[in-house]
Length: 63
Image (cartoon, rainbow, N blue to C red; front, side):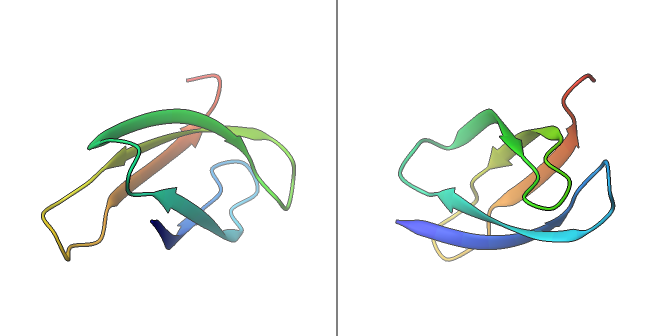
């Protein structure tokens, strides 16, 4: 099951949409390229209780 969230790219500051896979585990860490500027960003996802939106934090890939 996917949940769409809006985050701000840490490189170009554009609002972008990410699809979060809710079935991939309670804590997820991965790298994804910004669809606007193509720079990589580190994505950290923490799922909450059923029905709550996931907490999503993005940072530049180099951090």
